[in-house]
Figure 1 (cartoon, rainbow, N blue to C red):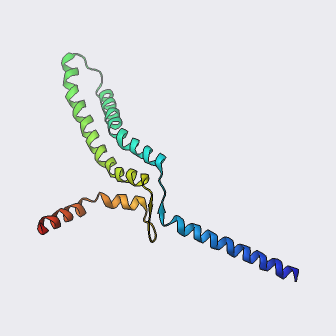
Figure 2 (cartoon, one colour):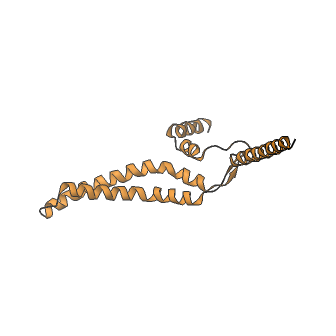
Figure 3 (cartoon, rainbow, N blue to C red):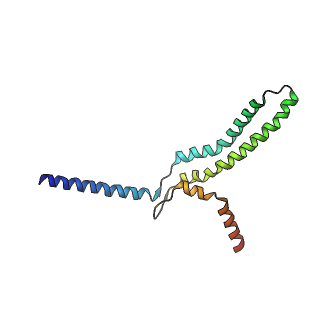
Length: 143
């Protein structure tokens, strides 16, 4: 009988643990807790990646072209380096700007009535150009 009681108690204990674990899981899946450190790190990445990438490309391209023999050649390389750096800056900025909504979402603390969506999925949906175009077109036709 003692073995039966022990089994019964351990079963009850494990069921209570399972129930409390399920409650904790459901509570965690309905809220977004702010992640300030991640938001700051992502904001720093968004801010610093374009100029750093442009600088790296300008330095590497400058080394690949070699040293200027005279003032004319050095001044002739300068526009090429500037155009390359600006182009890389614009391209990287465009790619990294897709992460900006995610940084904002990481700062938020929201409680959802049902299951909470993934912050990354919400951020990806926020920057879809075809959806924005449809919204603008719909707003223009209704106005």
